[in-house]
Image 1: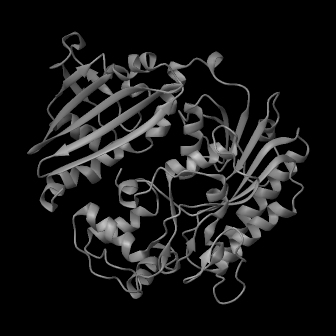
Image 2: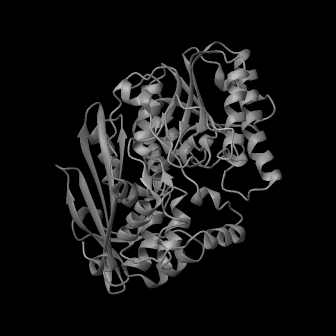
Image 3: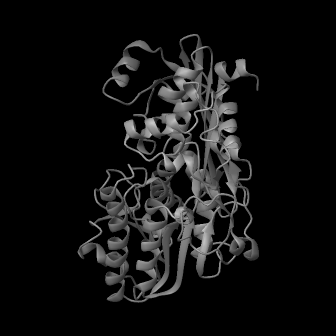
Length: 467
């Protein structure tokens, strides 16, 4: 696509598997008057005459206290522009200033269920503005929306109850996508969270990561229980002793709290303990696998090596009551909505999307769908079988920072000046984050996944982050 077309045409598609009959799913998806029941990225549609099919006048109810009323009072009605019950597809088009926005839903048959696709297309000179203000927001959290759809389509009595999956830290980016994906596959999922979220499609238990309480009941079931511990404070904070202590304590204490609860419950089938490939600090050109030693010299950074080492030590020292025990060192998980991409795209869109620092620092990554598949393999839900122990959740294709920034610039269709090392430090100070997240790197791969025969599906970095 030419640079000119990138500013006047844009498309993004989200896809989610559901362990449900495609006809039953389409009975909801194909009825736009019911969209608001499961997609919460907007407030649904008002369908004026659904009997007419193509050409039916439809009003999109935009969300928000400001944008919602503005859209309702100024935007013209859209129409159903395509509908095919045989292929289970429906399309809505909304006029925009000097262009249009098209939303398309399609349900395809798939082994043991179906795939639900949601596509947003923009055209016209307002494409860039609408992409950032409307379109990406419509796509956000689609897996959670699909899980709500699954709960509507598949009554509780028909869901799989042969296992209970408990996720601590289940409302962050990884946790909510994991919980939603497992719900869509018919699993019984419980999330441990500090604050309940309305309409979240998994069962929620309130906990603080410190004290025992009613949440411990989630670890007791007549069926095997699998625990996935993702709990911990967000890592992108200023590099201060107080913040490092908070990062460490939130991870160590929550791990110890879970271990204490598990000790008085029936033996867990699986415990997957989260960690990070940042444990290797600023590793330069070293090629790192599961057998590589943790640095103790200048490469060891307290907010990375120090925090992750204490996290893993807490797990290793705890009397973890589980048949299968994993430490999963996850690299940077990539998806169009990945939190890391926000500040990077901001640099690109302001013309500062060139190399950061010297641009040679390594960037180890894994696509969100591959990460979810890896978790399902660890839980024994899919093949291949992953041996218990230490596993690196990272793709075999680490990139240089120059390659990462080039991919972001290509997607945006913009040039970019190098930022050096001074600007990221200034920006991090202003935003309350840590510049070393961007200026350090690690070349991490997984010999465990290679030996297990794990096949990655997200092999193209640019395609993974573009959607």
